[in-house]
Image (cartoon, rainbow, N blue to C red; front, side, top):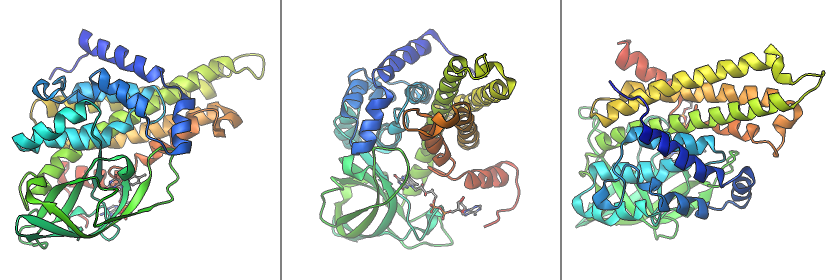
Length: 388
Ligand SMILES: Cc1cc2nc3c(=O)[nH]c(=O)nc-3n(C[C@H](O)[C@H](O)[C@H](O)COP(=O)(O)OP(=O)(O)OC[C@H]3O[C@@H](n4cnc5c(N)ncnc54)[C@H](O)[C@@H]3O)c2cc1C
């Protein structure tokens, strides 16, 4: 196994970080306040090739691997705001899923536009009635000639208002306990915010993001069979495959956010003086920051191992899940320590640390809950009985 950092990796970090540094905390706060997509930032990433980091060169990307995408997300996240997590919907859910499972026509249609920043995605999986039990979704697509008619409801769906396409996960055959993984299909749904058959209700979600989350009511939505990604009834395997990359991307975002919390805590601890010396000279302040830094570096190693396995065609399920678990915990703890270091300032909007805490804490629940990660480890790795 070889995933040490090369000179090219250092170049990636420096270049990406330079973009992130052009967009300060005030820029992100304004996007969040106005609920506006960060267009200039997105275009800068596209112009420098980073939105197409894993997209093959023949489709306008730079053809790198998951490890490089992880470094990009980590550095953008360390640069502040929603700089890293923003990658999940489009380059991961749109880009990687289509790269791996799209038909040649779909690759031609979507990948160059993702790389150039001209196409954005949302992803509709979660349902109120099913929750984390994906097999239990009951949004249903019924065939009508060469089209499907879809009815159902999705919950918590992020960024529909900014998306040109939604990757919609629907049943296409009823659940069969004899063949539980059969009967789910992935649809590419154009213009989901303005389309007949889709009704959006914004949800009151308290995270410092520019995106809105929606309840998505789907009634009589018609989608052509050419807009199926992968095989009819065979979507679940594609979804599992993509969810590992979502976990890696979530981990990278958490690590970057956690490291930013450490950076900010260190700066503040070095500057702020209360009893005649910088507060960072007190071990009660210094040691927890050092502890968090150590935990983040350890979480980063397992994340890179997940990338290495993914890039080498190996099963990265365990490492992707562990990366998600450890990085979300380490980042939340780092943000908590950064808040404590900032005293009362830690709770104000002028300092980023409270926002970092909210996003890090969210990553213990989204995209996958830490309980489900532990279920996976307990059952698939340690061989204990399934509890549910
Ligand atoms: C800000 C935000 C953005 C989101 N964006 C999207 C999006 O774009 N697209 C999308 O599809 N979804 C999205 N989601 C949904 C998100 O993925 C789910 O909320 C998450 O997966 C948890 O599902 P749930 O809320 O239904 O929890 P539930 O399934 O109701 O679980 C509730 C609690 O019970 C625990 N639990 C349940 N079953 C077990 C078990 N067997 N063993 C142990 N513990 C268990 C869970 O771990 C959790 O802690 C978003 C959510 C939020 C908050």
